[in-house]
Image (tube, helix red, strand yellow):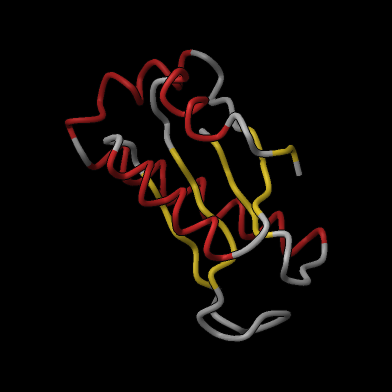
Length: 115
């Protein structure tokens, strides 16, 4: 699983962690709820549920990555903030991708930097 965070919006460390957690939980929920992803989900569990946190420059890049991941057949979760603390309501803050085949996820994200 890869969690992608926008680097152009001001978020504290705790807020960033919270947005990543939202993305991870939503990706997990989709994996569990859809039999299509059952084998990927079980493999991911056995591997220790790996997660890598990366960054993108802005919302445009995040949404482009989300489209590409969806077109590749991957689970995605676009996180929009509720606006209760640091961000304006509806701000797209993070993206979850996976669990899924490492090769496909890496092909889509290998140009991104770690957060």
